[in-house]
Amino acid sequence: MRRILVDHGRARLRDKRGGGAVVIEIGEAIDRVPAKGLEVVALDDALHGLAKLDAQQCRVVEMRFFGGLSLEETAEALGISRATVHRDWVTARAWLLREMSRAG
View 1: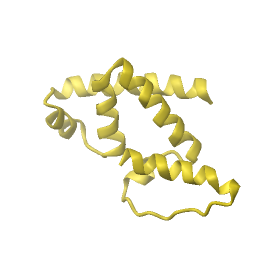
View 2: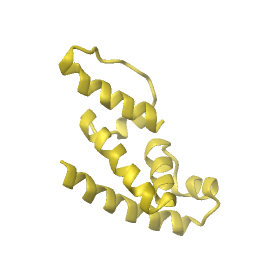
View 3: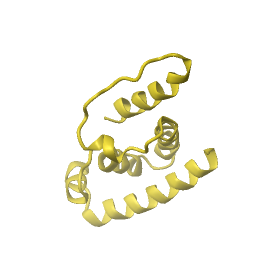
View 4: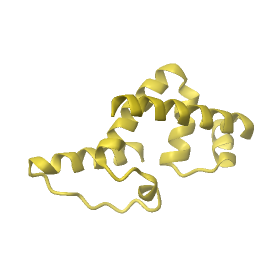
């Protein structure tokens, strides 16, 4: 899902060079994605940085943001507690927002 959304964002950025927009149906997840392709690419870049610092937090973000999983579903998928998922989610979001604001 992450790769699809990032590719979609990059495709939107290519429009200025004559590339056509690609219409893809990926359900509700696309509604959660920032409107501008540049923001999706910035998120992907920031996630690569987060993965180097804390791989588990990166997986939590991928599952929650790109996969649309709940805290409980993410906890079950990763084999960790709901409280740990919540803590990782809050921390990762704050870190990502800071990193993306620096890049923008």
